[in-house]
Length: 269
Ligand SMILES: Nc1ncnc2c1ncn2[C@@H]1O[C@H](COP(=O)(O)OP(=O)(O)OP(=O)(O)O)[C@@H](O)[C@H]1O
Ligand SMILES: [Mg+2]
Image 1: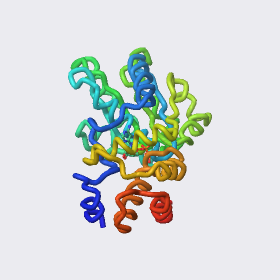
Image 2 (image 1 turned 90 degrees about the horizontal axis):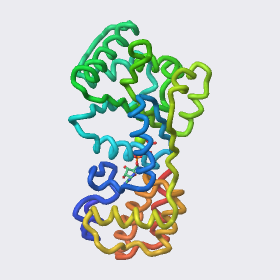
Image 3 (image 1 turned 180 degrees about the horizontal axis):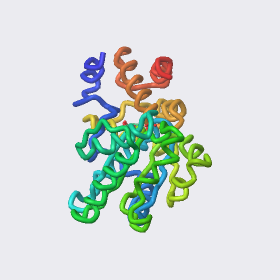
């Protein structure tokens, strides 16, 4: 199915893909706003929160920001959270340093992480930045304890800034009493908004262009339908745009109309 519509429209690769290259990420004002908060938080060695709807572009924004960090100055540590225990989180962090351990002692794991962080910060003069994606999945016990890996020399050395990325309930989880030590270290927050109709138009044109198409096959009304159907959320727009291209190709139509978007919408959630 995919190669038929690709050839029909003359795409050089699959459009609206999730594995967008760094150079093709649109530097939206939202990304700029997150980047400012990222820099501020890293400077303070504190914690920042990035929230947003599912598929709004949180991971992509952070992927772009982390890619801009100079490797001679920064050492990003990126983990994707799961609903596992704090031990799992600690092991994931250590795995980023290529350290595998079977110990179940929180004290030992914390010590091992802090040793790596202070080695980076003090000996190698590299600024570590811990990015935890999907942080809304973390258990409350993790929120209650995570701040301990940021405490160096009686909490006087802010060597490990943390960027927490997650869906909207992440902020709610941080309001829990047990999460107060972590929440009290948050210095910046940004909620990634959905885009408006005009930005959605730019977004679609951008993705068409990086897949090798100069002229947009989407009729104005189809763009409106994709905007409305997606609620301004990028991933959903990707699915609607791709699906409606497939529907148009099946219809032997070089232009994508509202009916094609409607057909695409009937297949996604
Ligand atoms: N700045 C951008 N430029 C180009 N495409 C983007 C941008 N941001 C997001 N996208 C597109 O939207 C898709 C969804 O974005 P992303 O995976 O970053 O969302 P998310 O908010 O992290 O979602 P989730 O809540 O599921 O983790 C990406 O795969 C990409 O195709
Ligand atoms: Mg994500």
